[in-house]
Length: 226
Image (cartoon, rainbow, N blue to C red):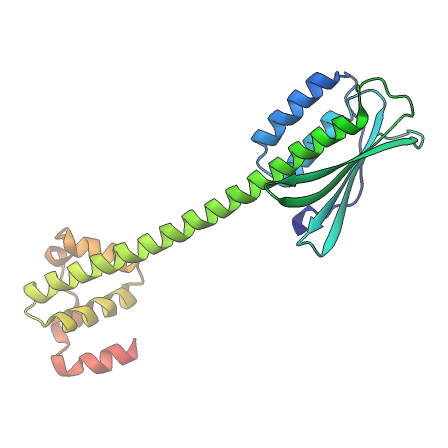
């Protein structure tokens, strides 16, 4: 969560006020749809500050459970409020930190400030947990895709080498070395060259000089050179 480190944020909240029920509904929706941790927390803070009497939202995050990061959102030009309530941001046994509200001593926009802050903190924790799981799934999907691409390339190269070995009357190992040399000379992806050979266009279009001139005895030196 180090990317969330920000200096305290001061801003003016929209004039239109909302009630407690609307605030909870909007915060829950934001927690389910947020695409970024910081932007999601800002949305939750902004909605919370639209309740009459609440003047400040403070979030203390646990970064790697070693150090805390403090984020603050509050009304500008407001005297220091006297009341406060704190809720734990946790989800699935993961403690993300604490959310604290500061408000007027006799707040009337929420029935119970402590209960409200716990609901808001819970939604924030669920959001952070969802985003972390989403990030892990994306990383896992990217790793699977890379492995699949490597497997597809290896299979295509093997098939292309078999075609070269048959059409050029070479041993399979010779065809592999010549194919790799051609990839190096043309500076294109092995999969692209292999697919061209498999589809028949490569061998029909031209016969590279390296394939015609290299003799079996030169294969070792060619492989070392590349």
